[in-house]
Image 1 (spheres, rainbow, N blue to C red):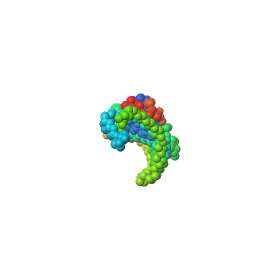
Image 2 (tube, rainbow, N blue to C red; image 1 turned 135 degrees about the vertical axis):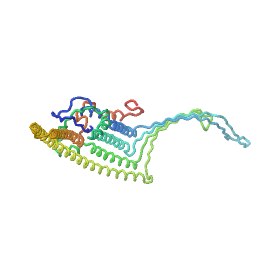
Image 3 (cartoon, rainbow, N blue to C red; image 1 turned 30 degrees about the vertical axis):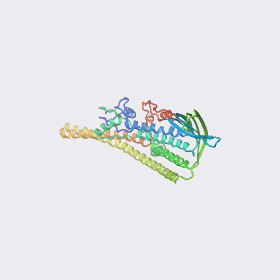
Image 4 (cartoon, rainbow, N blue to C red; image 1 turned 180 degrees about the horizontal axis):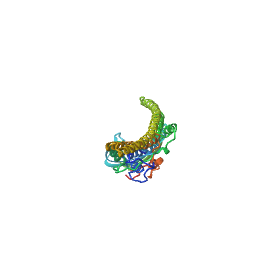
Length: 405
């Protein structure tokens, strides 16, 4: 789900509880609206659905290909044939002239029986692409970090959430309870659950299948071919009225040498596989670094709250002292106003520290890959990319999408 900066309320939260309202003024309400309305998130969902179609495209290699043909030809024939000789040895000729309309209708069916396992490998590759796209979608759900500046935050709030920022925001509570209790636990969780890592893992699988697909070009291809054709008239003889022909056979193609392009493709696929494995190592290091940094920010935010609380207490004591001294004439009104301003500044610093504490807790959750609607238990129907995949995986035809477009 999306990590959002929380603009501080006028006073510190005293009970540490999140507002219970469902509107955009609460952190839960804002997250629900962002999950539903954010255009970047919805665009990635569309991209994931488009990637789903790679699977039925690959599965098409298992299915027969049927082609229908028809033709209509106006033919004029003038044939002169030798039919024999007379008793005296003279040749006898026969001439036939006329126009004929020749129409032909045919149906050809081709079923691939073996193509070097390319269809199977393309299908597994497409399924890996689907899984990778789902993890990219999870990555998109993890990002949306608003800025603390008030004016910028208002504009970005509307961009991320999809509705204008409310006049007043309810205080939010940290979500530490949803994260591991130790840094080592957070790192371990991030290395196994973060979508950047799982995406890289699926990309390795995709690259493995691409190597196998490329190697399949070196295998022979076996196909069954059947055809039936009905022809009315003839383009060669006026006496032929109808012709029906049908055939069923097998065709074996063995690649011997095709200029070396297939070998280059295999080598290229293997280099890409090596790159994807290095990308996986990079993703693991990146997630570990991000988790460690976020954890440090959270610990610093906790310490800052303690410091600012002490600052508020000191400012309150100082203000009471200045007021007593002013009451007996030892301090001026300006001294009292300055002490009041110091207290206000301390309280603002405390509210800011509390806000940083909340944001840091969401940042840790996102860094471990667990910032989702399910983990946060948001009151919204969770988008399930598997639904669309199951709707289109085994469809043999049709151009309409499952939503009717």
